[in-house]
Image (tube, rainbow over all chains, first blue to last red; front, side, top):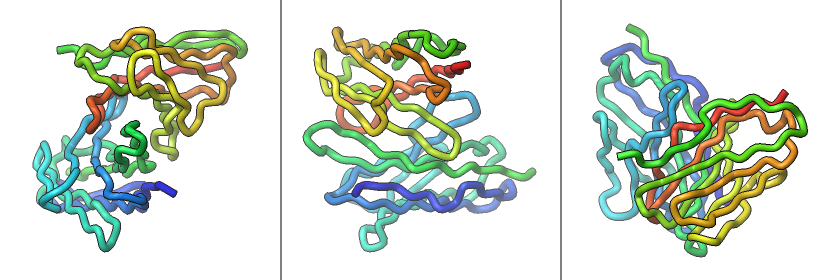
Length: 115
Length: 110
């Protein structure tokens, strides 16, 4: 069965500290992988995506993620967190099953940034 | 540069009432989706469409109907609203790789 697990419901970091948000997935074929960010009361914005090729993917706002097939993981990282990064982050996985491009989302990790 | 537009943004319904949520995209995307977001549950797929005139059930379709009569529009209907349908509803469109989301509709059923 296809699934996405984000083990951390809440994470708190100090401004300027490094960040890693975890994402593990289960998918039968080569997956498409995504990270989205949602600010309070807003829609979801795409941070980055992985389809194939280089397993280290760069995204917007200084974020990056690394695809590790052997660990079925796609963790999101940022070297130095800014207060404006406080938001909820969602990992998603999917593919081209029957040409539908449906994606499954994790339950999210809420990031709090301390000044 | 509208992207995906959802209307209305907020709505309060009484149990048993009906309503339609409208999603419009101006990017000529083939694929459109309706998700609901509930605390601690992430986003769950309600219905989706792979092109004009097509619709299909997602993970949680019960109590909802959809239509895609025009490529740019994807309508989500609630025929008889229930309190369990209180949620935030997001529409998304896609050219096949990656979604563009609307800003959501917050629906409360009392």
